[in-house]
Length: 491
Image (tube, rainbow, N blue to C red; front, side, top):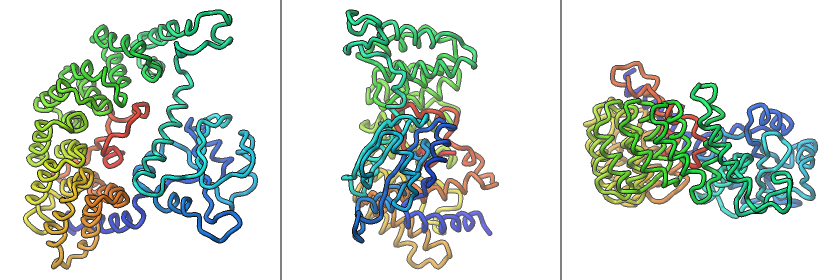
């Protein structure tokens, strides 16, 4: 069987299942006692979802619960993020002992359905609890649940937060009720900074990273981030510390750090360059100087892995910059390997509702053609990822392009893989129409292309076999953001 046939056989399975359930499954536990133990052992938040099929005392289907079960919990984005939690689904069929575990946390009265409860890994306190569900089952509902998950993680991370200078100190912190408000804060900041610079050995890295995270999350008008940024200049020769600082400053919308971090895009150490690129994608600054620095660095970068990270960062930071769009389209279309096209493709996905980006991506797809046409098996993976990009951009005219330029050309083909590919293309078209569920399904379906590339033993797929979820991207759960494409090319 040819490479093209093997790939399309995989696609037939993945795309048909992807649009049936919009992406994957959460690893649910129905035994709450076991879930508590697992959360403590793995030091993960326990997410308990209470979900009843029927309205209490009636045979009427509960629509909110149904929407969560059948759509929201199966969305690719939710499934991907659920890996950071231990997840338990409780229904009326769950035993009384299951609900008894929740009573021990102080939950009294009737347990309404649906609701979401996020419990500290130690099992002793509730981080966040939201009863009922008013978000429906579309894209807004997915984003609402993801926001709750992030909020719970933020509350957990805040356990070591710096005391607020504007709030009265407690007796435990001050020991004297007459002490000035916030007296402890400067000392706490100083203590954390000492932890940051306490050592350069790898054994100290865990404590250092935690101290940086606490400072970034606790910042008030720059009192925590300013000294961290000063350390960037002071510690240029300490590569291990420099990397930890750059990673820690890679926090969503921490724009004050963007320009200083961009100054390390040309560093001689690849660990510094790679982490600087990814941190800028997390920050998402639109500063013209930052965008210009990314364009310049991407053009000079010789390492294909780091170049991909640079193009992704350029996409998020330069989503309003015509020069950035032009460069990404050029690199996406002319990349010498399919692996080299991934970064520019994902970078273009940040240009949501940008008609010029959509037309440029369509031009690339038209040139590649459909399988069996002018294109070859060598472009199969690239074709699939770029279609995902078009779905992410979401321009309504692209729906017409997909139906007339790609789907229509498959009408007279009789190969076994045609039905699966049509399903994928139709999902892209619906996503461009504005269908959020179809958009999630495209994300799941495109994994078929990438998974095939990683496992193929072929000269054409040497670079595709390498994952983009590398050392520069892993372990960034504290960044407050989920970059586009991480779920797509992870693992």
